[in-house]
Length: 103
Image (tube, rainbow, N blue to C red):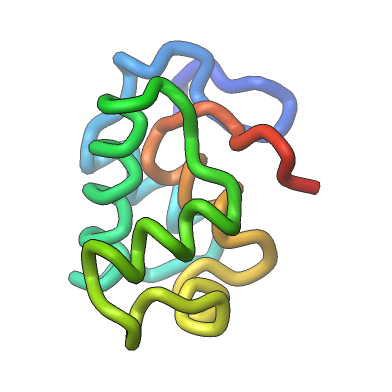
């Protein structure tokens, strides 16, 4: 990839992020991006711009429910799109710091 990342693969300079970088990170995570993925990426990037923090899982579910509706605003939906730890994987692909309080 050629971008500076920490030992977990998060960008060390948030300004290095672009949609192409997001595609590279997602591919490395084994995720094929869809419109649903991009809706969540835009959502967490806006959240970060507003609050300067990456949402952990509980706030992510609440934010998703508020902005995208109850069908998307649940843990199972997020796990389907971003397997493992949705908040961490989503933050990484969105070029944001690792959420605090995420195992």
